[in-house]
Image (cartoon, rainbow, N blue to C red):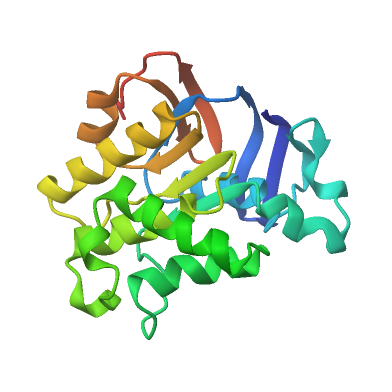
Length: 226
């Protein structure tokens, strides 16, 4: 489904974000990408989104070379992907319902389907009673669950979660990870980029370990041992 083939990303002669990285992710896998800050995790995710291009090598999504996608088709590619960030990126002046509905409007879903789909995803993330609240009226954990609802609303093939628990306490961290596992069990591929050792080791799923831009380990039931 996703394939990195000898990918190197050089920003300056002194900044190598990725160094000859190769791996493949199959449909419906849950993969943690781990490493210290600056290891290259976020750059990997940006390449899947076609926000960054390799200096060398190739990145594929569904057998399509991402960097050969025409600019006019980039939006179609990104609609196959849901993204979750550490800082939520919710629209502050829209309610939880409106934040989710907005994404569906952008991808061309009609009003009738929006009215049925938004309550469905709110129920999945346990925020049905918060539909009319604004982001600032939510706890940190609720904001992240709202962000996850927005990410899955258009039923993407893949969820890219970039440090989604970075701002959360252990209780809310556990809730968010359980939610990502639930989404995975519903058939969605999940890539979790994190430096949270406890989260990764509790998952007991595939782990790709990055260090200074290099892929140093890829284990089916790996542990975060850096």
